[in-house]
Length: 67
Image (cartoon, rainbow, N blue to C red):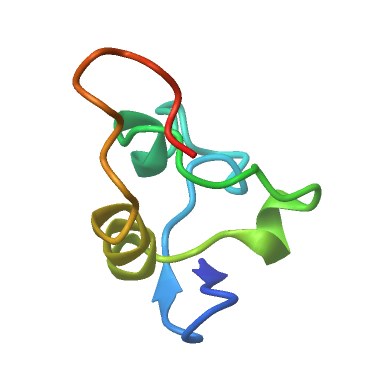
């Protein structure tokens, strides 16, 4: 089990668990934050990461990068 670095909640991280044969749950989400250097201590729980992604600005409809 890992602990969320934002809220402290325990959660399962597929990247940090060497016995996991599946990728981490977060790989199904769009990239939103840089991956921490130390996966075991830098991950966010599903609730915190999903809340962060929900608060990001949407990209412009014409495909230009958001500012």
